[in-house]
Length: 254
Ligand code: DGL
Image (tube, rainbow, N blue to C red; front, side, top):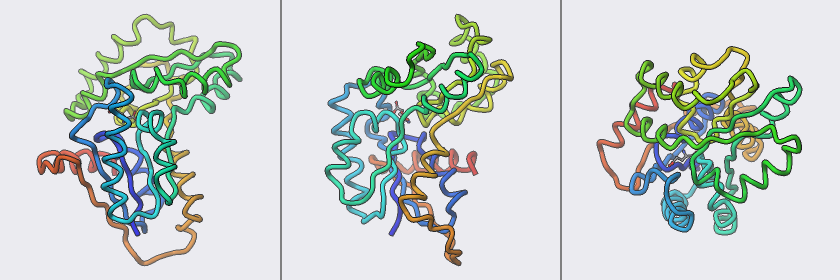
């Protein structure tokens, strides 16, 4: 059986790519909710419905586990997804805890990037207030970055300019870690690293998600298999042009 991956659009492919590299013998099926992308600027109640509808398409195919490769969808609907399905459901949330551990040791702050909807959720505020007793965490929504990604804008100069504008008001010497709390943002990791001081670490939740999935599946790659895994890419509006776009984004990541 395949492992299902889900995101509003192209972002979750960054998680799938890391998973595929670690577990190349598994079969994967990915769905992007092209009918509703972006999620991050919409209402929580609407997004919840979109997430349940799109993931039901994967569930109908018969999947072994579901990776919600989207921080926004996780923060809105992970509880309902776990109630609804009998297979394991793995969610993603901004990697604030490891970031804070790293920064605190160096006496530095943490900057979390996420979608407006993720950063507004009680789930996010509870996560931060539980661990950030010294008020070291700052959060910044970057909705434009999802738009750039969905339009396949990866031009270095343009994106450097974008980050420079966004970070203009910050004294970056005070920060030790930047958290990419949206899977779309991981495409821009290298470009971002070029506009921030070298001591700042950039982290996302992708490696942690791969690790969790591997645990849930019982570390399948420890049994060497001859089977070369397959990756099938789908989208909710069945647009062949978008499928092309997914393939071109996927090639950047391998
Ligand atoms: N990739 C998604 C996330 O991780 C959501 C982007 C969006 O649709 O706004 O949050």
